Every structure is written in C-alpha cells, then in structure tokens.
Length: 385
Image (tube, rainbow, N blue to C red; front, side, top):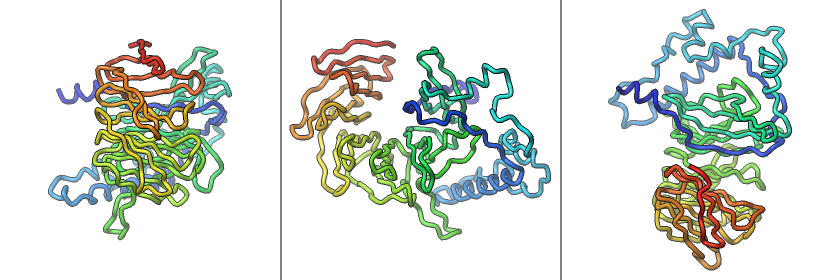
C-alpha cells in the first residue's frame, strides 16, 4: 500500500517565469567521459557520508549512505556498470562525431530544441513519486505551444525557485536557484542539458573529519529573492527562522536576520530601493528591512501566517500580504494597513500584481481557484478552477 501511495504522488510545489531573451538559443548537451563520471561518483559518495555523519542525534540509526554500493565503485572496471549505480550511465559518452543539436530525431523535434526569442521559459519544481525534478518548459503564445524542453534531477524536494543571471567569475548567464528540504541552496545552469551537478551552491554541512564548519541555514529553505541591482546578493528564508543575505561571489552569508519567531516563507526586494527587503513569516507578521541596518525594521501584524508578500510595482510604499486564513491585506509603509479582502476559503499561496493595469491582482489558493481581486474597488471575481 505504501508503494502505491508513493507512486501516486504527483504535484508542482513551485514555479517561476523567465523573461524572454535570457536563455541561450542552443542549450548545450553535457556529455561526460568515464573519468569525469567516476570523479562525480567519488564526490557524491563524500557528500552522502558527510550528510549521514553530520547529525549526532542519528548515530543510533542505520545509515543509508552506501545504499548504491559506493564502497566498491573503484573495484569495478566497467564504467557503464559504475554509472548505473546512480542511473546516469546515459550521460557518460566517449567523444564521437556527435551531432551539434542534442535531438537525433526529425527536423520538427530539432526545431523544438532551439529556444526562440519569442519563447517564454517556465521553471517548474515537480515531484512525481519519489523523484524531485526541475523542469524547463517552453511556452510560445503565438504558436500555442507548451512543452518540457529539458529537466534536471534534484537531490531534494523543491520548495522555491528563483531565476538569476549571476555566477561568480562568469559572464551573465541563465540560472535557477532551488530552495529545498535541504539547508543548502543549489544554483543550476539551465542553458545546460543533462547536467547532474549545480553550477554552485550556497551553504554546506559541517564536516568533523575535514575540520570544516557549517555554513548557511540549518533547515529547509522556503524562500529566495535575488537582488537585481546588487546582482551578487541573494536573500533566503528558512524553517530555521532566519533570513540570510548571501554574497554569491564569496558564497557565504554576509548578514543574518533573526527578527522572526517562526519560519520565514516569503521574500521580495524593492524594485527602486535595492537595500529594502520585504519578508513574511509564520509568526503572523510582515516585516520591511533596510538591509544596511537590518536590526531596525518595521513590522505589521496579520490575521494568519504570511504565505506570500509582494510589493506594488505602481505604488512604491505599498505592499500586499496573502495569509493562511485566505485573506489579502494591503499596507502602506508610512500609514499601516489600508484594506483587507477575504479572497479564498484556504490559504493564499499565489499573489501577482500587474505593473501596467492599476489594481489588477490575481490570487491563487489550494481551494482550487484563481481569482481576479480588484482591490481598488474591494471586489473579487473567479478566473478559473
């Protein structure tokens, strides 16, 4: 019964739009040599061992770190068998006169491999059975097409996604940061196909064996926000009740904010004041920080947990908060709460406010509805279910 229940799990916990023109027209297919594959297996073995030994509370339990028989990998001379331990043998290919495009099928499929300037990308965190996947969708409104261009197998259950174009010591690219049940944030290059390792990570587990201290969060990462002005800065919110401001160039957190008494699950930088960060927590508060002096902040009480917080792009002092009670509240940083609407029968997990049409707010909820909430007139209407 447990196996059947697990196989029926199929849902999308997080999505993120990518603006047109950010992706490479011809994504690169990664092909690993046998030596590279063996090195990746060595690194993976080390990470699993660190993870299994990092928590003293788990010492009495049976370790699953070697469930893939990593201990014997270097006794195995067959690289194909070695790769099959991880299910990645298809990625290990010796140099050949392979095609430039990664599709070997007909011309129509090769055309789908190319990302056009009119294509939109949608990043989707997808959980199916016991697999966690980052899917890269292509959506073209003119052609009425929507399909998965490629996907990436994740090591942990995805909880939030953030697009960015920054990688240390590299030209601007096309990346997706993934917050998950792991305290470590993985940043993936989504211009690469068949990639099995992130481009870089933010955070790491402690290692007594190597004398390596812990860096970053201590629990799952629920929220991510990239600062487009200071492009080396990423904010992250966690179950550990902290907000970290990461210096991605050095891959360390420069600032730790300890202003919440519960999980932090929504973050957004101000579009005009790049030092101003909006945060929502499960302690029923929304807070605004000037990150130059993060110990001083403004705080407002909500009627439930802050599920989602966003700035109003047309009114720079105004922000909105969706709560676990199904309400949407509007605030002015100078005046306090302006209005409140009961939008849903369950928590408000999605808020999108138009930057072109004043007052156009779209909300989403686990009550299986999407609504157009006209907050200027305090009205709501169903968009769909």
